[in-house]
View (cartoon, rainbow, N blue to C red):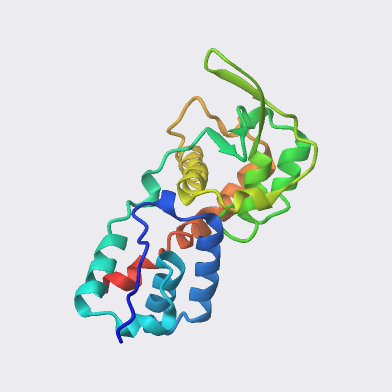
Length: 216
């Protein structure tokens, strides 16, 4: 008797959580020299397909899944999400990086780079804090008190995470090229600027989306 398989194929970054992405990346790294294994792992983590059934897919089904996954938009174009609601609490992105508290940027600078890795959820917990007041397009957020709860960010979708990461990517480019006159280098804490500079190459590595293997 043939077993009927049901696949839930994500159609955008909104359908993938940070936890899923990190788990997939960790597994892909372990099988970096095995393209077939990487494909199976991608379908397992993103579509819920047990690895043992990947080879049993018909060519038509396999190509359909690949086609759907390859329709993902490039994350570089995703914009920063200012407000995020988690468990009924509305969080907002740090409204003024140049005036961010010493404690906040000191805790961020303990990490060597800014990239989507095991430390990313902690960075998000520092940058996004509960809203205290929101009126006429402006808002204030809870002062940073040193508490970091990265667990709540693991279930937030990757569109939010990519938007935050590429905010810093574009900020880095603007700072280095001097294009954006309203954001002079002196306006950001020196430690933050150093992290951005060190993160350049690794930010590109964060884009090593596993779909590259499926496109071959």
